[in-house]
Length: 440
Image (tube, rainbow, N blue to C red; front, side):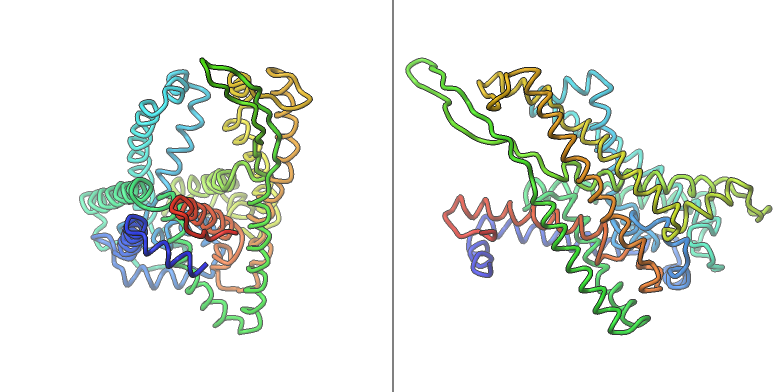
């Protein structure tokens, strides 16, 4: 593997791509640590340290994790990559509802360029909404509950507009970073930025557990994290290979086809998208409760008490049950949206392909649908278990950061998936140049 790294850096164009990617990732981390104008950075740091052990810290866990801790620090890149991810998911779902989007998807590169443009516009709109909500919560003292300090130096309308504009511009710049990495670097840019944000929090979270619970608990957490990584790699690499046979056909004086291949269906066909859906949905009720609460009337209403009791604390059994159920539901939902057995069956029939034992057309589509539904069940259960696993052990670290611990759960799922994908891309480029790859 080390020799493969040496071979990659000895290749001029691949070396430029890797260095370009590392440079943009470094700029991203720099912006994540740069405070926004009008924000008292010292007060923010003290408030984060003060409330990090409270149960309310868990409501921002996924978004703050994706931003590498920049969200709660109100930095320039506080909004991070989440608006673009959300916009991409929304546009992808709308292709099923809006015929125009479906036509663009089938137009090839030109249609994909148009869809990307729509995604960018929607990302900016979502960034403005998220930045506005974040600044409003900070101005009302509800972003970091339990902290009495004023984290905004200027709470005037003009001052808050400046902060919103800076955060929106930061989100646009992060989006540009991701697109540039995808186009001119190595790997998927958006995924690598999320990877960098999660990896940046590993030393801090590990130090917090080591200081609060000692070396024994820290060692057990590391062993558990290693076991989770092995399990995630095993499942992420797992796939059901459906054999596909292509019939021979004569075009002019040449004969095509006659080959055997397979259609790979991954066990985790949906990736990490269902986890993002479920977390975002659980985050909304508390956000609405915070925005609708009145400072003059500190006593919460009955529905706000229910939200605070069941939908805020990640260690609550009701929270865990709802979270797990939403992940299973969204896994089936997203797989049904992104994988169309009828389209795959039509594509195979168009090119003379068939599954042995099944006639082309509807019988092939029914078989693919049957297989997909069978492997989606264990995939959804696997996603749910990986996501709620840290919630079941919230008291291990007792640091408040355990629910977004980068050693386990969703973070490991993302890091392993992104790492495998990036290594495979580098490996494919090395193999094209007759070099030995990473994975054997």
